[in-house]
Image (cartoon, rainbow, N blue to C red; front, side, top):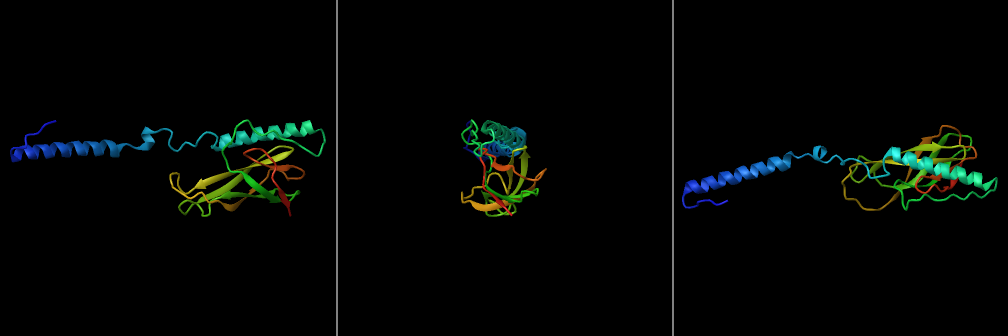
Amino acid sequence: MSFDMSCGGGLMMARRRWLFLGAAAVAVLGGCSSEVNNPHEGVLPKGESLGEMRQQAGEALTRYDQAVINARGSATVTVTPPPWNSPPGISIESATGTRAGTRLTVTFTGTREPATRPCGADYHAEAVESANAVIVIVIAQPHATNEVCTLAGYSRTATLNLAQPLRQRVVLEARQGQTVPLNTE
C-alpha cells in the first residue's frame, strides 16, 4: 500500500485507511470468542472427567477383586497397578471412619485456600464400591483454570457417605488402586 504524503489530503486519507484497518483488526480479534472458535476449551484433559475417573475406579476395583480371588483366603492381597504410567486424579493418603459406619473422611494433598480465593479449590469426594473394596475419587473445583500458582501442597480432607457400611472392605486410592491406611474410630 502506498500513500501520497505530499499534501494534507493524502495524509488524512492514510490515517483513515490505517484507522479502518486497525478497527477491522480489533473487530476481528476482539470479536473472536474462544467459546465459539475453540470447542476444546473447558474440556478436561483425558482421564480427568468424572465419568473417566469413575471408569478408572471401576477398573481398579475389578483388579482388586481379582487379586482377592487369586489370594484364595491368604492375608496378603497383591494388586497389579494399572497399565498407565500416571493416571490423573487426586490420590488419597489415608481414610478415617468406622467399620460399622458409612461415613468416611479421606486425607489428600491439595491447595491451601478455598475456591473463593485465587489459586484455591474446593474438594468433594465420592466412592465407587465393590464387595471387597472402596475407591475414593476426590474432585477439585478450582477458583479458575488459567491461574499461575505455586506448587505447594497442603493437607486437606473430604468427607463422603458410602452406600453400605465399610465392614471388612479396604479403602483404595484412585490413581494406582493401592490400599491406604484406615484409621478406625
